[in-house]
Image (cartoon, rainbow, N blue to C red; front, side, top):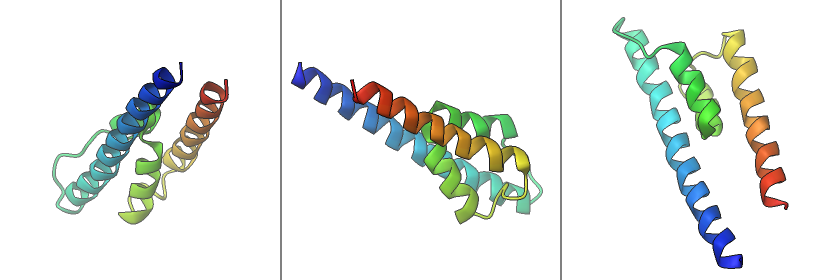
Length: 95
């Protein structure tokens, strides 16, 4: 049973690392495109990165790139999604 949990925990951590890296990069790409007045990544896509587990990368990307930090939708949704992921992680792995 311990190997089962260890293998799954490793898979979840790798998934979260990849999603967070992609979210961070997506915020940077969108910021660059905004400056150059080019096609942008839709806001729902940026929020969805946080919803599928990239909330840390999204939050860090927002403040590192100074992007979407004045939008209430992002200032509320991204931290709330991070909190939900933390609660879910505690509930699942505390069992």
